[in-house]
Image 1: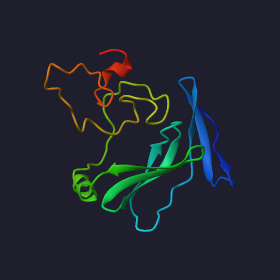
Image 2: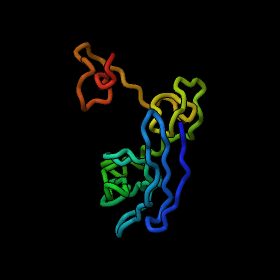
Image 3: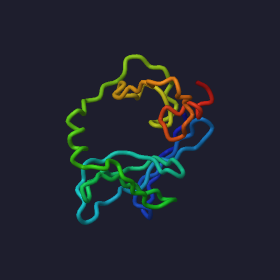
Image 4: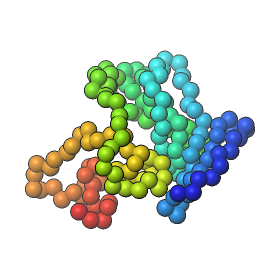
Length: 156
């Protein structure tokens, strides 16, 4: 992993940096989204632009009984997506949130920041929270909408 120096662009109003990993330059940084009227901030986080995969600061907020996430990509504009369909259910789920701790067994070398190095790398801070078990022999692991989608990896 090669990291370039961060550069601040006063015209842009945020610090931008990039890293080179996997023969690709990955951009990091963007403006911090602002809350709009009738929105309640729930947390700040990081997210990705769905077009260019730039790592961006993001906010998670409540509006009209739902939880949303907003990020602003300097190249692709503001992106707002539903994060949780029911704000009350989101608050109930947060009761089960536990303090993260580093995993003990590492399987992947950290070549880039999360989420670009996929797998259990030294930066990984959680264990399995939701284990999925296929209870049918009819599943061929090839439906694009399922997060079991093994076909994308090219092997099962």
